[in-house]
Length: 305
Ligand code: NAD
Image (cartoon, rainbow, N blue to C red; front, side):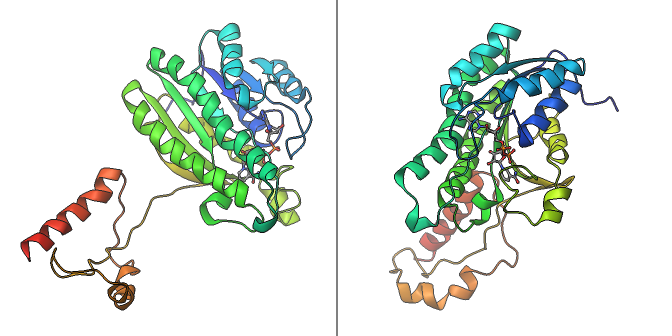
């Protein structure tokens, strides 16, 4: 099999001045892509700015690759896309990776802590992707990665703002995947585990050391490749391990015998075991699949009336 290469492809990695984003940018650069290394260069709570992107662009170029640094915030998504167009004339791959943390227990989360985290993660990814989408559409090719988190999937103490934004990104990705499909624009979501400045005081030291950020990059690269058919999926990745998620829904139960019967809280209580039983569970992959079973069940209820 041919090696996974990105010759002639233009890649934007947001938040690529350090951590996971840096390893993505370096890996793309090493495999032939022209890379826009975006980073505002602030601290981990989103304050300040610097030229962190310069170092990574320099690393790529020193290794023989092609890169340009960009210091705009993801809230100025159109400027980031314009940098790619001005320098390289196209945008093939967009990795929405930039992120900050403003952890507080839920009751102490201020408006600013909520808004800042949403502005960078969810709104920032929306704005950069919205600017990239028409360019990809015209090319009839695009690969987009959203970055979620296990905190969004499972929840995490002190991260109500972050977990809400991170699972919001999955919803955004799922819809972009549907709208992009006919233009060969694929959108997938990665929930990474990496020892970075965001996790250095969260992960136990051994775990921090082993979960090298560069071990996530191979999944991001493969999902971004033109030969990869995957679209609208969610993956967890860490330490060189990768796994796909899917939804699981219990078979469930109609809490009435016919379409004319009332449905009561008592009936829900009395059927709780069946409602929450995952034996022979369904795995709906689309909205249509999820609602089709419901519609069939309603027809049975009508027939029983
Ligand atoms: P990091 O702090 O090392 O990298 C994030 C980068 O984003 C920083 O370089 C920062 O300057 C940049 N950035 C922040 N705000 C920006 C803005 N407005 N515009 C442009 N750039 C901005 O952290 P990381 O761990 O590498 O995180 C990368 C992504 O992965 C984040 O979205 C994070 O939420 C997500 N994530 C990381 C982990 C993990 O284990 N490290 C787990 C789950 C999710």
